[in-house]
Image (cartoon, rainbow, N blue to C red; front, side):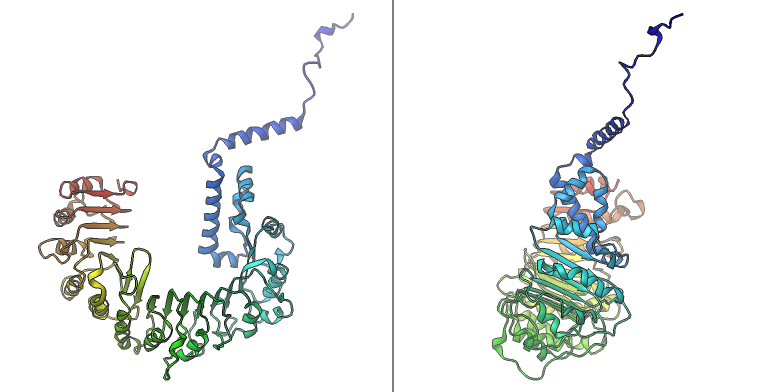
Length: 527
């Protein structure tokens, strides 16, 4: 019997299964599904900004961790999320301008080559850091061929590695403007304040505009810094290093006529006996920061080098018993420089720190971290020290910010009253970072500045920032009178503001019955 061909399966409508075609279709389906996700559909500019922010956060906040783990590019995992993110990251040139070298195995690594390929049209930031003495020379060998492309160089390596660098560093680095030299301060291998070879600065001197030296001792002389510098930071983080007199510092800095920003941290340990020439003034200096400096040296430093327009930050954090008695001598010369070209209109009080600023930036900042004693005694002493400053510019202050201050009854409150009387023209009062407003005495201050006592007779606006009212509002029965006190005291004001505060919505509604206008950050409400 002949076999019926109609019963046989036909191959005309059933071609052989193409596994490659099926795999490609699945890949396309996955790509289509991923493309519908909001994080993937975001505009390239937004994604690029997110990637750059992530890179900055991981690089800055977790730097010691990633150096120890030898992870040069911690943000690189974003490229593995999807094809679109990878394409955007590769097209964002700002992500590929830093050649970060952390371990010897990076020699010839694809990631290094990826950075070099994508930054071919721009200058490089070369960042070499390690905590291991044995790795320093190997890391330098990876970086050396690319130094001619460097705009910024940062070295945190064994001090002994600089000896081998001298024979190999290029004689001319045409793009270099920023140099950072850091001693591996987290290691115990090095003697405190190891001296930085003078030849290192000479190799990189040409064209430098910014120089940062951390935890190295240097030889102060008139030739140790390039005359082109616009920013200079010398930071010593260890005790027990060699003493440096103010005279040495002034002689070394007097030739930097283009200097605009200067930071000296634990550098000036001795005042000078002799006078320096007045013509050494750094007329272009815009910002000066002095940390852990001898108080007597501050006055001499300001008189000799610093013009009246310079914005100043001075921090006294030395625990020596000789430091505190000398501080009052520093304040009158600082007060004499105020109000200056731009009078301050904002006063910030943060613990033992006073900050005077205009609407753009800080004019004068003084940190009295060396004050000891009880909180009441410390604030009374702080008030007495800062009084000359407020005598000079207090009438021009229109904004007062009280950051993390406390207001107890007794001598402490009397000291606050004296201070408020020195700034009678304040129109805006801000309380910042109060997790326990009732215990910290916020209500009694509000009552006195805007109530019958009128410590601040021209007050119009009361503001609270980063504070917690969630447990002390009208809904919290045990503290029901606290918010009512605030409402009563603020009744005569034009406006009350809450910015990033935890506060119940009924409390805001209650306040609106007493105050003309209430501005509330609804996105930070506590429900």
